[in-house]
Length: 441
Ligand SMILES: *Cc1c(COP(=O)(O)O)cnc(C)c1O
Image (tube, rainbow, N blue to C red; front, side):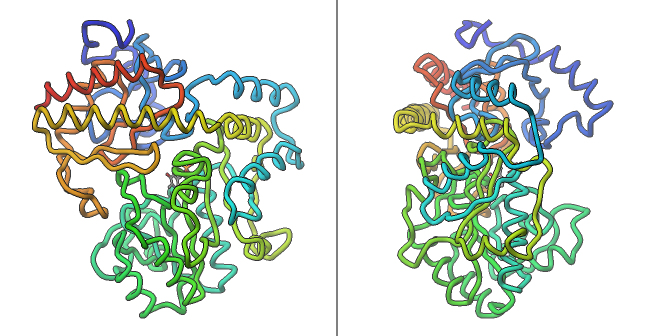
């Protein structure tokens, strides 16, 4: 069966359901990351047997156009030959040494050469580790403890950054999750995104305590919400005035929004570049590799050069570094051009089909990163993003799934495309969008 099948797939997925039952007996909720459980859309999460270019094949042998792409990393699609070769070659030489290797140098050089303000970089194993380490470094460098983040921005599951409740004026963060001590969240100020006045007020009140502002370079974790013109520049100006650092989280946008991430699209703000950047997803090529980096004098605070401790048994793992390096090297201008073509086709299809069937929607996009909000009108912050018809999205998700297209199972996520999404995959998706829109209208 393929996505070209005339008949939609049945609604149930017996092999995935059986695996889920077994998984639940030994893994909380049966999944190793919560959003995989289809919590907000219902139904049986598909267990994936393998990936092929733009497709994933589930345990029942059904093939789907993959618009999850591992939540971003698979920018080249599944099983890209150059990446496979690099991984096999690295693995043949050993899996891990706990001693430095040339591959780490090559990957660090690749990152530094692409993102101009990044002078030094340290490799870690996940985006969470990257933001956690960047925050520790910012606190160590400034000798201050308070961190400002924005509601709706996700920076991994770092205690201090899980606080995202609150809107309006400077809200003292409350923990979003049990297990995050109030003391950790108390050091976090959560502000509404795209609201420079709120940032000014927070700094007027507590500027001398604030170590850093961390922001998604262009948020993708509340759906795509681009920074308003002047927002990044304003953040840089305000933080600099108060001696705080600006941390630009490019874990999702890095090497995806453009070859140099969001920075490559927006350029270095007139007020100056962010001090620190975090990367992950694409730069690991599907393996656990991530990084944080930035100004040489700030990075020099890290052990062993400086006193801020940060370490990792598997940091810079040679197989992961090989996958990341091969992926970045294969991300040619043609690859980014293809991502744009795919994003153009899918956003046009949504606009046309949803328009035709009278479905309230809003498409927002940065580079080839886009998401579809099930509401009308511009989405500028998390409060806007939450005014969506999530129930309707759930019906759309399942209509697409039965037609062989696997969207991210949440209305707050980017629809991730890859350069392997060829015309056949795009056409199948466009057809599914039209039919699914008709179904949910
Ligand atoms: C995915 C993501 C993270 C967390 O990365 P993990 O590898 O899942 O820990 C952090 N920040 C942003 C912007 C992300 O999209």
